[in-house]
Image (cartoon, rainbow over all chains, first blue to last red; front, side):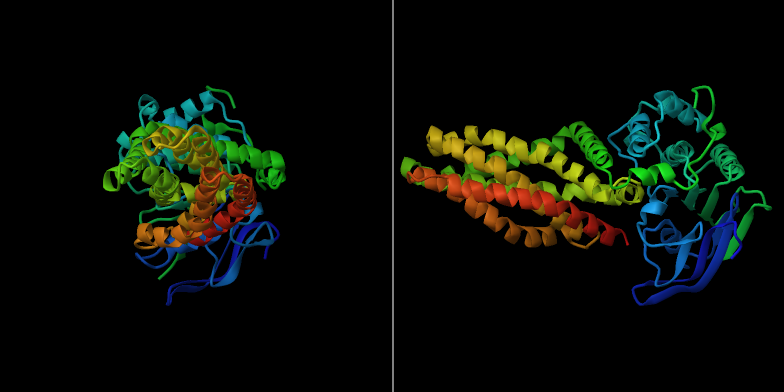
Amino acid sequence: MAANDVLEARRLAARRGFATLFVDVDFSLHDGEALVVTGPNGSGKTTLLRIVAGLTAPAAGEVRWRGEATRPFDPRLRGVVAFNGHWSALKDELTAEENLDAWTSLTDQRVTRDAIVSALDDVALSRQRRLPVRVLSQGQRRRIALARLALAKRALWILDEPLTALDDQAVDVLADLLDAHLSRGGVCVAASHQPMPIAATRAKTLALC
Amino acid sequence: MSAAEPPRNASRIPVEGREARASEDTGDSALHAIGWALARDIRVALRSKGELGVQLLFYVIVVSLFPLATSPSRDVLAMLGPGVLWTAALLASLLSLSRLFASDFHDGTLEQIALSPRPLAALVSGKMVAHWLTTGLPVVVMAPLLGGQYALDASVLATLTLSLLLGTPILSLLGAVGAALTLGARGGGSLLALLVLPLYVPVLIFGAGAVDAVRSGLSAAPHLSLLGAGLLIALVAVPFAVAAAVRIALD
């Protein structure tokens, strides 16, 4: 492996029940690179993402972060990964602002109320920030998840179908966020059916079948 | 990061998560995590007061059914009372357990807290404390009032309340293990009852036993000590068991 590989997967395999989803998946990412995982429904994209995030144990192979092998729920990985999965992890009863405040105060970094307001403004939700998430649409929930991604400042972004339910404007916001993240030297693994808004020079692709 | 500055211009990312990792396993981090989960769950619970009211009302109704169904005789009621109040507390606790982790599991919150740099055992502890404060404590507070229906005298009511105060946290803790183990299982609700009710039996025996002892003129101390010891053991062991069960559920 090259010295500057940040994230590397070696001969990963995944099994769900008795079905083998994939075997011998290899990839490696440098600082500032993104991996776009494609493949038909049921090909194991989400499982691969969950393995990389450390939520699921692979049936074989290993994921290495900065040269060190990781295991599921690895403390070293937990501090760096931002996982945006199928569920937005927002509480219906709380407002958009309270949800973001709760998530950012869980981690060590101090995020001010102003930063949260400005992050919600960036995803065009400043008018809705005092509304309970219960009344927001699916797309608006995904936008809040994007704002959380922007605030969290993690080095490894894992995005499962990030374009689902997003309108054109929100896709532009995601593109900006990704561009800034990769420019800062972050890495990203995304699963998507649609073309991801990432510069071709920075994106690698992995097709599961 | 200043207010005017959009977050994408924010300077530096903790590339290796060094800061986050440093705080792992320190007591401070654990306390922060407990407080965080507690505050969040209480806040969510207070926004959905209806659900809390339903549980408490259930407890009140179950307790009130027995005098109607049995006998108005003071002796019979005084004999039944402690057992009925304890059984109703058990059922009320069971009723609320399905909510403890299930909604967090289905909306992705558990995923996120399991991936956070904070210790998962501490985060689930905060949730369990919140569960007790919103469901166990009201049951304890209501007990002396409801005990009036059973012609229990003051010393018996005091022991009953004390035994519930020691016992209901154990119910929340043991129930949390069951709730975490049945996450994602089909028919989780009824499975949860089957799994948890047998575990509740010792708590019921010592809790109702303490009250019975006082009624027959003995000391409640042995029963209450055993309840206290059980609470301490559960407090130490349960968070780790629940954290392990949550990780299994997420896999």
